[in-house]
Amino acid sequence: QQQVKQSPQSLIVQKGGIPIINCAYENTAFDYFPWYQQFPGKGPALLIAIRPDVSEKKEGRFTISFNKSAKQFSLHIMDSQPGDSATYFCAARAGTASKLTFGTGTRLQVTL
Amino acid sequence: NAGVTQTPKFQVLKTGQSMTLQCAQDMNHNSMYWYRQDPGMGLRLIYYSASEGTTDKGEVPNGYNVSRLNKREFSLRLESAAPSQTSVYFCASMYGGANNEQFFGPGTRLTVL
Image 1 (cartoon, rainbow over the protein chains, first blue to last red):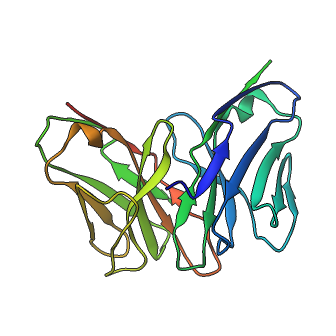
Image 2 (cartoon, rainbow over the protein chains, first blue to last red; image 1 turned 30 degrees about the vertical axis):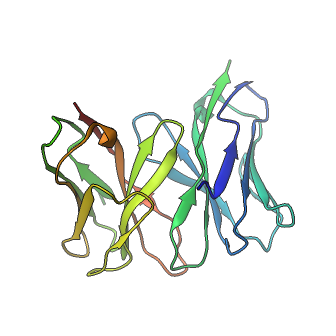
C-alpha cells in the first residue's frame, strides 16, 4: 500500500525553469514531511523539510508548499540548474518514534 | 567524520548463497535503518533499530535478518539469496528526538543470479 503518492515519475525542464514535484498522502497522523535529493551512485540526502503547521518553507532556491486540507505537498525549484539534475523523494512520518514512508521518486533532468 | 559507511559497494551472488551487508556510523546516532531501492518503487524499509538492543520489521522484511551489534553497527543478512533480492541497499542512521534527519550511506549494489 503506497501511503505517499508522488508524481511525476520523471521531469525534464530547461535551465531557469521551475520544476514542481507533487506528493499526496492519506494518513492524517503524518507530522513531518521531508524531501530527499539523490545523485546517481550516491545515497539520498535531506534537502528540506516541513511540518504541517506552516503552509510554505523556503531554503535558497527550494520551496515546499503544504496544503493540509488537501493532504498534499509539493517541491518547487526556482531558477533550476543542470546541477539540480537528480532523483527527488518526498517522505512522511507519523510521530517521532515512527518510520519514514517514502514516495516512489521523481527523476529530474535540467537541460541547458 | 566518515558518516555512514557500507561494505561492500558491489556484490554478485548465486541463488541460495548467503551474505552479510555491513553498516557503521560514527555520529553517535541512536536509530539505524536498512532500505532497499528498486526502480519505480522508491525506498522501502526492510528493518530498523530504534535504539541499541532493539530491532523491528519494516515494510519488506521477508528473506532478511538484522543484527544491531552495538550503537555504531547494524548488519543485514541474506540467508538464502533469491533473484528478487537484486537491488541497491542503503543503510541510514538518525539521532532521534527533535533531530529527524536520516543520514544515508553510499549503498550496496547487489545482484543475485
